[in-house]
Length: 343
Image (cartoon, rainbow, N blue to C red; front, side):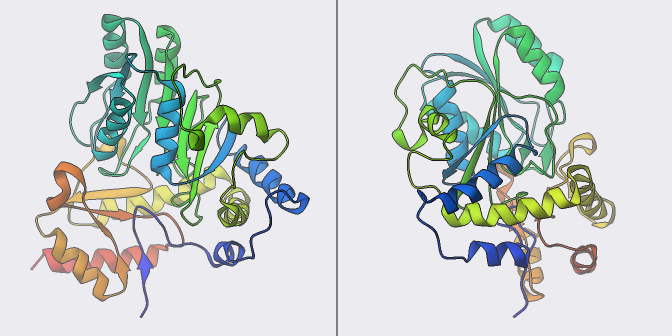
């Protein structure tokens, strides 16, 4: 049966990426693999500023790795949240023992940078501002990163960013201390690659688990090696998907996603979760009291979308526009949903 993924990730992967992923994995110490790894690192460097690191794992591991390498127990962190994954970032910070100051103005609404700066000045001794760039649970994107970078500089704090469902379709154009992301969403590759972009040396004084110790990875990257076995086949997939993305051009890649998302926002007869100014171009989220029925309806026609998460789990749906998705697919989905909710 036909099945097309319109999910927050994993996404519908282009055929050439699947074929690259399906190759026999090489021994990662061989020069032949190092050449592929070098190509991937060079291509990743064109997407976001910083030294790219690829660990075996998912986006959750990337976020935890960021937290544990840059925050120590007892340190003050301002954490912005506008949905479930902002709450999960806070959970990670609290598990590290940080003193977290939660800043929220509601689901799908992004706190203004001046509010963040005011809180930082009132608290004093803040080590980091932590936030989700693209909130997968609410279809909400924070487009203030350049201003928050200025705020962090003025406060002398780090800027730690979870962009698991953001880059490269939702671009980050400024230099951020650390960006955590993953292979299986806008990078169009299979799950299994936790990706970090590092612009500031790890500063953890407390122990970090060996599997996520960034210093070990940074020490080996110059020799095109990793301290442990890398996600070899994911790297093969990334090599092909990055060719696809960079061949299109980063600005064009963003525009393609913007057009897809805007089609849904403009035509679907459901209310978006996020405010207009911060609606995501990779994951759209809509309120509905018929979430389960809509998901089941689309599945019968071969389209897989996702339910909500967190506090809006039972009355929202999420439709991803990443991957091998066309406007024709979105037209079919829109027509089916509109006909159903119009009954």
